[in-house]
Every structure is written in C-alpha cells, then in structure tokens.
Image 1 (cartoon, rainbow, N blue to C red):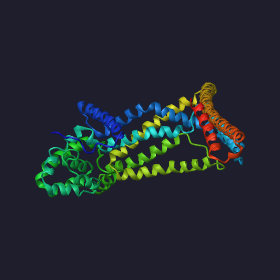
Image 2 (image 1 turned 135 degrees about the vertical axis):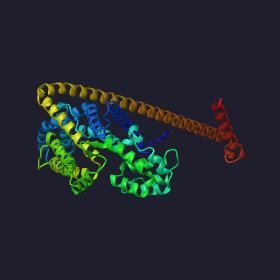
Image 3 (image 1 turned 180 degrees about the vertical axis):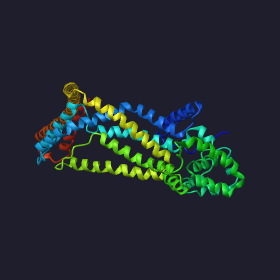
Length: 444
C-alpha cells in the first residue's frame, strides 16, 4: 500500500529535517529489534534515548563544564560589581565590563554560553519528543499494524465520524476538513487518531461496528505486542491503567502504572541535584534569578508527575530513560571535571584570551586607519573644490575690474576730444566701441 506523506510527520521548515533524521534512527532500532524477535516500542524508546544522548555527549560535556566553571566565575564577578557599586558614569561602567570580560576570558567561557547550549539542544529535544509521540509516522512496521482496519474505516463514513469523535481526536479535526488525497489523506488522519485512541476507544469502535471486530482484534493484538512493556500497555495512560487494574483486582499492575509517573518525577529531581547549582547572592539581581531557578527546579519534577499520569505511559518511560541516562553521564562528567587542573586551564585560557584581545585590537586599528584615510580623502576633495571655486571667483572679479577701467578710460578720452558733446551720441558711441573691443580681445 502506498502511504504517501504520513500526516504525523512534522512539516515545520528546518525542524522537520531534525525530526526526519531522528525518525530514521528510531526506525532502524525497531527494525533491528524486529529482526531479533523482540519488536517492542518500550525497549526501542530506551535504546533510542541512549543513542541520541550519546550523540549529544560533546555538547552535554561543554554545558556541564560551563556550569562548573560558572561556580568559580560568579564570586569573582560579584567582587567586581561591588567594587563599582553606585558608580553609574560611563567610564566606570566601561571599566567594570572590561574587568568582567577579562574574568570570563581567564576561564575560557562566555556569559551567553548556557543560552547557546540550550538553543542548540532544544530543537533536538523537541524532535526527540515528536518522534516518540508520533511513532507510526516514522516507523513503518508500526504503521502497518493499523492495516487493513484503516481502509475499512475510511470506506464507512459513520465509522469515520465515530473515530473523529474520540476524545484524543480533537487535535486532528482540522485535518479531516483538509483532506485532499495528496498532502492530507483520510487514511493517515485515521491512523493519527487510532494511535492516540485508548483501549476503551477501540472497544467502543468494536461495539458500534461488529463487522470490524476481527480487524480491530488483529490491530489490538499487534499493538499489544509492540506496546507491552513489563506487563504495562505503554499506549494507555497510567491513570487509565491504574483505574482498570484496581477495579479488576490486578493490584501489581496498578502499582506498576503508578510507578511510571513517580519514577519520572524522582529521576528528574535527581538530575537537579546532580547539576551544578548557582550560588544565591541576595544582594545581587543574579541572586534573585538563581532563587527563581531553584524554585523551578523543584516545581518541574512535580509537573512531570502530573503529565506522566495523563499522557501515554510511553512518554513517561521516555522521561525516565532520558533522566537516568543524563544522570549517569553527569556523574561521570562531574568526576572528570573535578579532577581538572584549573590553574593550567586558567593559564591556557589566558594565553588564548591575550591573542583574541591582540587580534581584536589589530582589527580596530586597521578599521581606524581606513576611516582616517577616507576622512583625509574627503577633506582633500572638499579643499580642491573650494580652491577651484575661489579661483573662478577671483578671475571673474579681475575681469569685471578691467572692463570697468577700460570704460572709464574711454569716457575720459571722449571728454577731452569733445568737451561740448559729453552728453551727446558721440561720447556714448566711444564708450560702446571701447567695451566692444575689450570683449573681443578677451574672447579670442
């Protein structure tokens, strides 16, 4: 059967490529488990979590190292800030910033380092969550478990409406309205709904359409084989499993369902304790932020307990596996970092920092020299233009002066030659001829 574009695959630009890569890793893991005879989603999630965390190991090590070094940097930075406390002038602020930057340079870290690590890790973690939450979209073997049930439901409009009415199908209601047979297919939308359907939803579907009971049982049998992890159906929520288990007298199954969210919260709390904690300085703004972070660190494990009660148990299993893997990695890294010779590290980073400062200074000097050269060129052009304009004005003044002198001389000669006709036409003609001769002489 041609599945086309499986709708549960992420289509967000750039982000979808990260999800696609992780989806291929998950499909490869499940394929190997199927080949050895244990196609189990729970085991695949655990292996998948280990593989991805190992791939992120270099980034995790840098983040852990940054956190450890920050514990040594913060006291020195607080001393510098107290030194300039109350000094708000520009020179003092610049001096304080330079000294703080020198401290960061000495330890070879950046004040924005933690943000950078989180910005890189967050897309990967979200993609990891997406793959686990949308397994049929990335693992074809699991997608095939819904056949031929999906085709039979798609052929019956009443069955489609019933699947659409499931509680967890609400998020896909718009997809039903956008069915075009290419990007949005009815079959894939039904798979998305059935992937989130609980066991009770399947029972409701079987009761409403007895002709589909055989296909429903076949699908449930395969899904139970894939989802069964230590007796728990990780496709159901722990809350649903706990209620049914206690109602039917399966006490151990109910306890196992409760343990999933409790272990998720406990392992996350353990991660918080293993992570380097920022020092709380009540006199500093950073101290207030550190207090807020501590509150969040204790609040989040409680939130994870609630989420794991209401989400499929597979998500809780992922949170537990992820927290355990991170905890083991942090213990190993902390031991390695604690053995580091910080004196050698500071000496090494000081040399690097000096080279960076020298390089930055050389670039600034080069830029200043280039700016001065452009300024001189602009000034020279302006002076040249000014001189040219001044010369033109001088020539024009001299021209007018000579013209005036000739006219005066012509008038004087005319007066001497004809004193009785100074106001007559002869005198005016003499002046005009003199000016004409002057113009012709200058135009040649």
